[in-house]
Image (cartoon, rainbow, N blue to C red):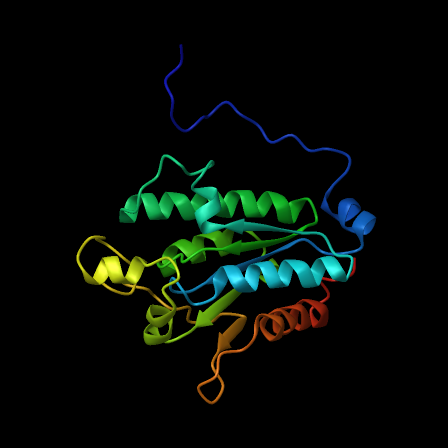
Length: 207
């Protein structure tokens, strides 16, 4: 039995039906909308709202949620820096496949490290990776704390929690930034419309 490792005897197999043909079939352009931000910043809320808005417009999308993928694809990974990197790499590869299929893939993960997000961007052509930064203050995220995780982290019961004792590295050149206006957080609908407007203007909603 051969040892596991980086395979050297595998070859890429091209099929007659490619990305362009699939995009024409469903009249949209495949891409990855990568939503990043602190826990409680509204990533999943935006992802689901965006998914509904695209569905209402007859566009095919799929959400890769950071918690959901840990129930299956990434259930063997923890939260060490190395496992976080592998978690993001796997999701990035799956998101790329969805984009190649012509779907608008919405990836919603804290993804705290800039190098990991940049590695996912490098998997696609740059224009097809749309980074959405949920730029919400830590205070707001901690006040929400719907999962009770910040409270546990502050009590020292969770170690390596992003924003408390592990860093979050904000994007330097994201395509979209979601943030408060005059101290008020945008509604889920408003956030979704902001992203959909970007997709529309940049031609992703038609082939």
